[in-house]
Image (cartoon, rainbow, N blue to C red; front, side, top):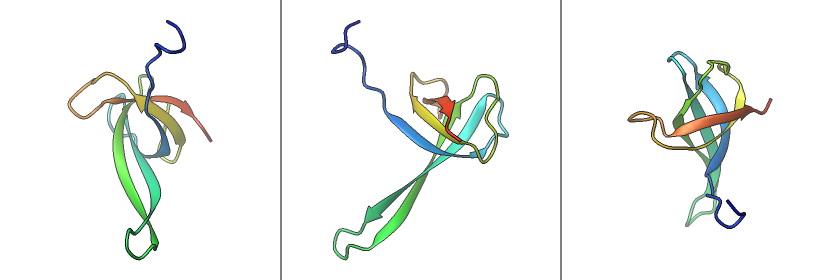
Length: 84
């Protein structure tokens, strides 16, 4: 595969908020957004269920994850690595 043909993956980084499921972690991604009219910045957060094959990531870890094929109904993301 050449550089042009490679698929662009969506990647995010977030904080693991739950590791209670088998081979799955819940990662919270928080981003700052400015209000359209007033300009005040506020935080918007979203939770993603990510695949963790070896159950190596624990609550409080900062991780990088990317999109992948659907693994289950809710799991369409895979953890790539731990950031801190």
